[in-house]
Length: 430
Image 1 (cartoon, one colour):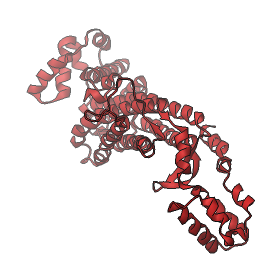
Image 2 (cartoon, rainbow, N blue to C red):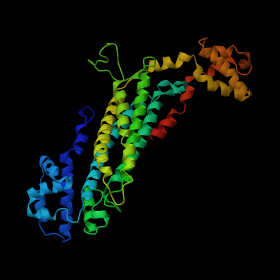
Image 3 (tube, rainbow, N blue to C red):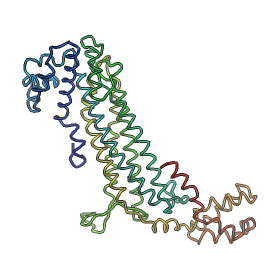
């Protein structure tokens, strides 16, 4: 993992020390359960708790010879525990350890991701309320449409990330299962109560039916959820990037003292953070298709999924964790320019009121087709730079035959567009 895009808290979950520590806990808990059931000698689990240890370098050394990571791990642990180690892994298969460990790691990763989601949500909520009534032009197809507020824009992102949080909670639950069911998942050589005990101690649920491996549809949902969240990050990052363009400049990333934007052009202030977030989103989404393809394993099991998960597990969660906190920082420190928003809105000479004029003519008895024609012909004059839209409407005899100057002027009241803002905020923020 590239340290540039990683936070230590998430990276630690995927370290060899963390992985083998979880393996040891699974094996020890299984021994405790078997001892309570009278299936191995009394005192075995206490001896394991007291003496068990491992060294990553030693495991690697043994694996180089035996070509099997779980056997190498058990051999190294046995070197510390001694004779009682013969009861470790009794009736279990490698997937019992590997799959349960992976799910523990994904649950822990999800918990950290939820912290990041909460920080993004709080930042969006704070800035949305700050700019609840800050007017800006809404754009469709990148073209001026009708007025909205910057607060509403941010509220749309808050609602989207809130949905993403709900999905992540569901995805966490989906992978919070434990399988200690032995070869081909039949419990032939291990008591199902061992699985229930281990699952309970780990805060997980027993896998209802495993085929020696935990079904990978669970993991597919998990990584697909990460991909959706990454796309939400990219949508917000893209919005900031567009708003920061020189011709728009309604908002921009914070530019710190001493920061440099270009090695060649000293004047540059580039949206580097949100561009970086766009790239990180692509990396997270790159895990989705492999996770989906992992679902279809051969018969009871194969290990075609293993190499995939060793890569996408750390990569997707570490990248998304980093991206969430970077996104939160962008929103928290975003520079917002209300005057520029208003200036941009007025650049088209009031054309954002065209629908209001259209509807007013319809209500005055003009057919919709004729109303559209009258409004469009005056709008196109303003579009061509020939003066304010309202002036053209007042000079059009067909328009003024139905609407007085006072009525037309009333149609250009900006506050009209904001009468439902409270309703929207109530729906989003409660």
